Length: 153
Length: 153
DNA sequence: ACTGAAACAAACCCATC
DNA sequence: GATGGGTTTGTTTCAGT
Image (tube, rainbow over all chains, first blue to last red; front, side, top):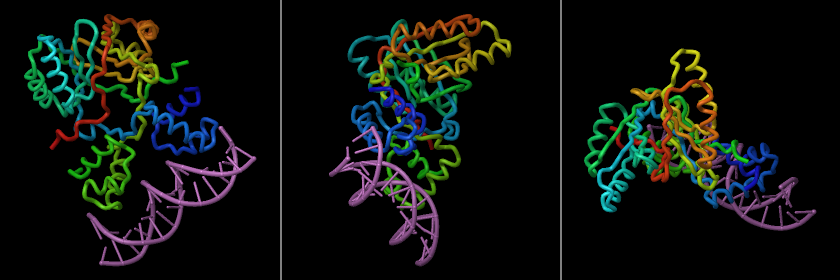
């Protein structure tokens, strides 16, 4: 994957509606080779998917909460159950297993505090949790799906 | 915005490559009215943009870090400077002002721990910070851009 | 408000150089 | 990788019901 591929990826992660010919022109390639590169990047899974990004506010999903979790029971069964349940909750848009004192970190998107409380009660009902810390966002200053390709060699 | 609009949005946030005719069929609409709805949703900004999602691992961006920050100086000038600097850092893919004891929370995507250290040094050099807590992800169990539309009325 | 069907643009996939 | 052409697919627009 060379510099041109990365430039193509950067363009596409900023604007997925760009025409192949358009992209080709910006990276100094004609249509066919540019199209072939994009095909390859898709086949290789570097381009995972193409999606529409929606405005959470306009959909009444104004609240983002970050949740740090320490589980109470580290047995395989309990963990499996926890991971499975969390993964299928659509309010959970991000779910990470963490290093250090916190076991898991979630990013949760809900309409409001009331809806978060409903979610929270479901969350603590899955398996025993030792500690749960909810941090509420009051302003989404920046939020992007664009990965930092430019900072790379 | 009715049930059909939300169904269209859900389809598009899962797969932005779907043809209008295809979407129409799935929501029980023919091409033209379906197209008009999508146009309206785009004009209204409900659909913010269409992008390609890339695989961070395949791009050598394997490390996600969540950073909780308490600033040391709450003067307007200092805050403005901080917000401006953080917003323009491409490694920062998410940047929230928070309620409670933590002032700001960042999601940072970098190649590795070494690269994070470089970022960290830049971060603490912007303005005086009272406290910075970095939590490292060891596994991205779930990560989606799809908002929970289904849970709504 | 939906249908059908044009007109147009773009993606896709060949050759050949 | 460029060029050019040809097929196919999807978008966009418009007339009709």
